[in-house]
Image (cartoon, rainbow, N blue to C red):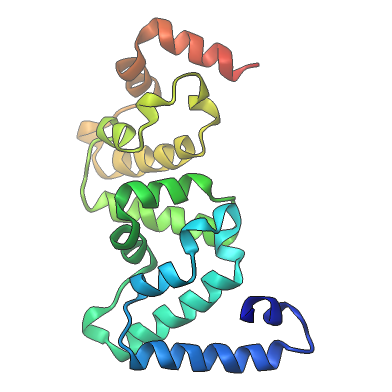
Length: 185
């Protein structure tokens, strides 16, 4: 209801006041940002997640929560990973569009993964790209993996890898040829 009211110029002020009251209520109840993610149904927002009013409300709450509880601060990535698990966060990642918020989220996810320093071949499996088969080249996760591989290679030139090495190792020459053929159709 507040979401719809935010879109209407006549009711936006009321909706903003209600949102502020809601955030204040959540803060007084000491709800974690992860609990509020479920309330806002962020996992169901799909491609336009970062443009959704639900995300805006949740993001405002996250900021207020981090201010009130500085020792328990969470980033967006940490909240999504803790709330939905890595697999759930990856699923959300794969459904996002290429808007500025989504690009920032993807960049932050790659940065977070870089702290693990997992080899790109292992990250390829974590993203389940080794199971994508003929759909590999159209998978939105492939571009995220490519970002990760480039960042990994820059930071670890001694363990550098290429896309073709990873794809060949994962699929073999014959299957890779089929995947490439499917991608050109």
